[in-house]
Length: 93
Image (cartoon, rainbow, N blue to C red; front, side, top):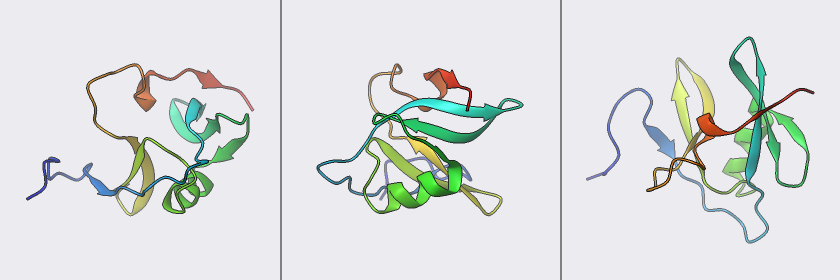
């Protein structure tokens, strides 16, 4: 049995990060909606590219979730909130 809640926002996939995987340092937003992510190497990538990179093990600390047929990244549950995606700053690019 899974320890994750079974709802429409549950993580569907938790990829194993590579040794050189990036972390997400900021969110790119448009009208309050996340459209992309800034990585620890400074790159800003759009949401679909980030999902694919995470699936390939290129982003650490995230899982893949699905809402209404759209995949997106979610923070992996842990005991701290400061690394949750929703608590990250926004970037403009």
